[in-house]
Image (tube, rainbow, N blue to C red; front, side):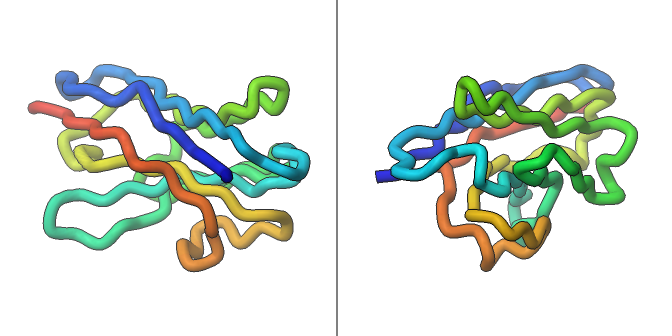
Length: 125
């Protein structure tokens, strides 16, 4: 069965950087055909889309993270990344990676069929 395992979260000061990883396993088809996304959920708030990347490498970023976050993927390692720079307290949330087969609908959560358990990011002011 498909497993997505996030790692790299932690507690940091505002302005710091973190890189999240999402390792995928159990695919019976080519991982490269997946659209991948990062979502986050802060306490008391709904889960929201942060970033997404298509099989071809096209990226999508939420306005709140543009210029600070970068999404990338290493298909040889079945791994998705989220590089987060200049972190702000409002970035504090549980971060989840998710996958769906092509075609991509970047930030629509209901389209993603596979989800990880999440990794916590806490940014202190």
